[in-house]
View 1 (cartoon, rainbow, N blue to C red):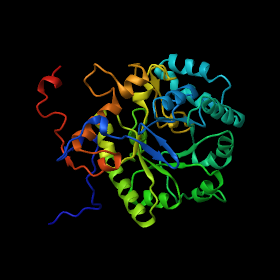
View 2 (tube, one colour):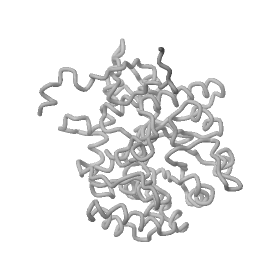
View 3 (cartoon, one colour):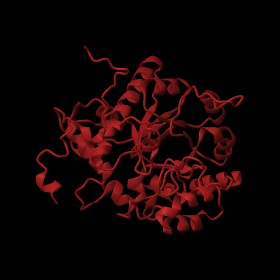
View 4 (cartoon, rainbow, N blue to C red):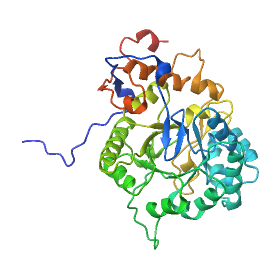
Length: 378
């Protein structure tokens, strides 16, 4: 009797299961360009710091700008709920793990103060930095105009899973095309992991797509709900949607892989899979300047009924400049991330990120273990 399946499952791949194939031509790393563009904003480093309170404060957003990247402030976080968020951060980072989730639920129950949204944006803009601020879909229509009026350059609309056809009991939900027309600044939305959803979101006129459901070190969505697609496959799907959308319309939408990136190798594989940039939390939360002081936690951690995150101790490793650009003496790929990308692009003969999208990749489940006996036994 033949075996019958209720569902056919596609094979999906994460960073540890694939490898990048070197090119037929090589170039010097300094000849590569790692620029990322979102709408009318261009960044020398294709890296965004995640909108997590332990990662990005107004001060850290300024520092990310100085490093050539972009820090995204959580517009619904501690910085817009409290006049003095740093005393709350002190409590979060000093209490026992068993107590922290309940405390997070308590402090995030404080209402968002809309005057603080503009104040935090002005803090970032006052330093000369590009300002990006993130809201959840349910609050974007109400809160993002105040951010833009205060000078925000980019609005990020972010939830665990985002579609262009969300169903709700409310009379009228968030319509991205109307939001984009009203704000007149680049809008980035996420998160998604499939071709069809990415394409539909691009059709609304957004400038960037965030890719990833549940890969972050502080996120427990995959454990709590079982939902998620490994990042390489998810990025490939959304990059295919960008390619087809560009061929149809001539408009280029940036694809940003969000979460799961620990090393320069992960960073390079995300870009080779079709990403124009990456959104990173833990490596930046490990910076000496990060507000979480060696801790990080997800935006869904404080959910009143079903937390989908946890406070994690990531440690403090190095200054942000060293994490992004080196020099480094560690050999595990956790520092000089931009340098790793430039060297990889040079090995593949890619002058630009779009050139890098064309490199070959292979399925390689033994790529991190082949010949590494002594490394693994240490």
